[in-house]
Length: 101
Image (cartoon, rainbow, N blue to C red):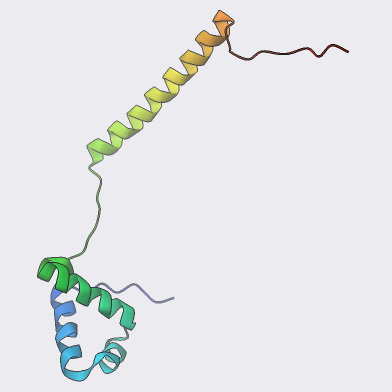
C-alpha cells in the first residue's frame, strides 16, 4: 500500500502552473496524480486563492471534548435518576390491558 503523500501549498501551485504549460494529462502522470485531485486543487485556488490551498484540518479543542464527555455522562445520570423516580412513583405510563374472553 502506498504511503499518503502530502503536498504543500507551494507544490500545489507549481503543479497548477505546470498544467497550464504542459497539459493536465502529462503533468498528472509526472506527479502520479489523478486528474480529479488536480481539479479539486484548481477549484480551491479559484475560490479562495492561496489560502484555499492550505490544509483544511478540523481540530476540536481538548477542553470542548472534555466538556462534551462530561455532558454525556451527566445526561446518562439524569436519565437513570428519572427512570428510578418514575418506577418508584408507580406512574410508569405503561398500562396493561386485560382482554376479557
